[in-house]
Length: 161
Image (cartoon, rainbow, N blue to C red; front, side):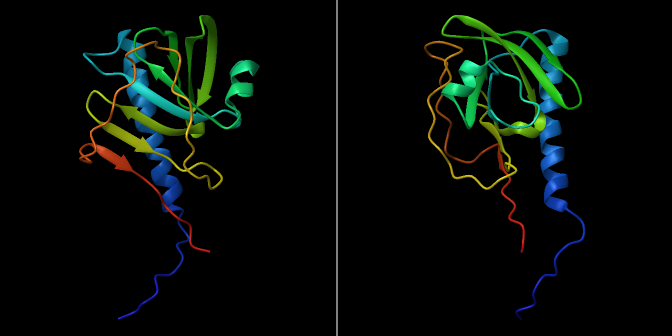
């Protein structure tokens, strides 16, 4: 049986992406409300630096013209979260910076403490690109994820043409 699935008039992939980005917002909102990260939790957040609504210093855009990963662990301040974006203070090479990142610009969220990960589609098709490690949390901030697939959610919908 080779039945072809008809194209959907409902944008399921976009709806799922939006819902999963809301998970990131809810988690960050909880951290902002309590004033800190619980236990060993910490987050790697990857986002498109040139996406609409992203507000970061030009020196960071110059250094990371496409995508950047930040770490929320020890040294961050003024985390504020609303329905569409978050803002946070971080230091890069000991220069304090405020970043505002819409949830729609996020392409990845990872909590290595529990090996939970979400991946999101960017508005354009992109290939996996290697990037330099985040600099905002100093030595020892990098964790190696367990490759057993536990607690990992990867969403990679392809639109039919």
